[in-house]
Image (spheres, rainbow, N blue to C red):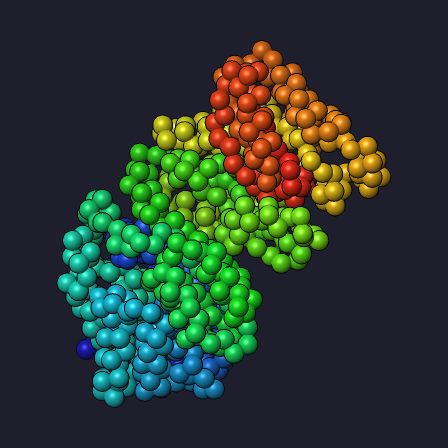
Length: 602
């Protein structure tokens, strides 16, 4: 037993907040090491970032809390963890804190016994949150640590000595995880989540000993991993690709029923929280179905889906690639190209009849476009700061530099929001207003991603993208003006005249005007508008070379096919890709719209 001059015999709300902050500081300092050894259940290298992100939210959300009562303070901390929980380990951590809060409810301060009892309750609650708990994970270490507290708290008269000895016990439990899971043994590492919990305990013990958040680095008993850990580990959860999360807020949420229904859609399920607020984490192939089921229990928010297998592949490829590429969901590219070139996408928020959805997370492009004709109001909004923050932090952890390419700023605040968040997280941020959208943004982003794969830095790629902008052209043949009028792109008077005369306008997002949308031609009938679009394209690309075309449409596959044939005939060029357009095009152009984008060389 180690003696200490700091004899803390009780914890109240303020003291508890301070020890939680100390725990968070230690974990955040070591999160990179946790990412390096993250191999279970999927070696996607983000356990440290997820746990650190969860605790960072706790620190920020509780910063101004001054409750002397540990019951009230722990409730604030638990709710902050639940709202900010990220990944499997982060949700487990949030459930642990919820269980601890439940154990100290209505208490002003806690003794060693109170603390021990609350820790035991926290351990039970964390275990209950998991659909299929496994030995050798963070749950094992939490259980061993809380059991040690229960069995030994009566032998101590202060928190430091009890926590110091229980920390040593937890360290031994962590070392044993290597022998309990085959993937850990194969990689010769301990469980990352379990070690993260020990880092939290180290921060607390340091604080009780020193009375400050400054830590003198000590030699860890946990060996550093070899650099090839992720190369050597096979992905265990091959059946399910998407790490899917959301928050559910409601009244009398039946957590067991929620676990049962969502558990049928995947594995690695964690449902944490209370009957009023629940955090859901699951590995699945049906993220949209998960969100739909969750919505039956309350209001769904904080949705997220991540391709874990792609994350694992990124870990193996980013050693040569210096620059990570970020765009937003107005960028139209096929999924296979997004994956092939490791392009990361920030989802815009969509509003259909005032219901908020995340683009390509809560709803697919195809489903959104099918809903357009019956909707009373549709609009889009820039990605949330939380999504940008998570993306930038993930990119920073995996790349030396980050280049963000976004939809034109004259029609959206997406670029500025991304630029601001990048500046707050990255040492040398690079964000570009591409002056374009849909397939135009897709073509530019694809070129940038190819350059990144060749090993170019963010500054050099940015300079090339800026030069590309004058050679990007996007023309859209519209079938209706109703959505342009509703979205404020056309006046009601012009819309009425256009409908009376059966005018099918061709609009252009002109990069020469920073992407400002304008009517390029007024046509009578669909076929006339298609022919006029091709004529306008010929004018725009005259004298230019290396033409790369993309076609995106809103429920208009026949029109897309006709335009592709016309392009092949007129320009002797095939289409790079064709797909349903991002919802931002459908919102303002409506069903039947078809956009042709071209990127060329001067």
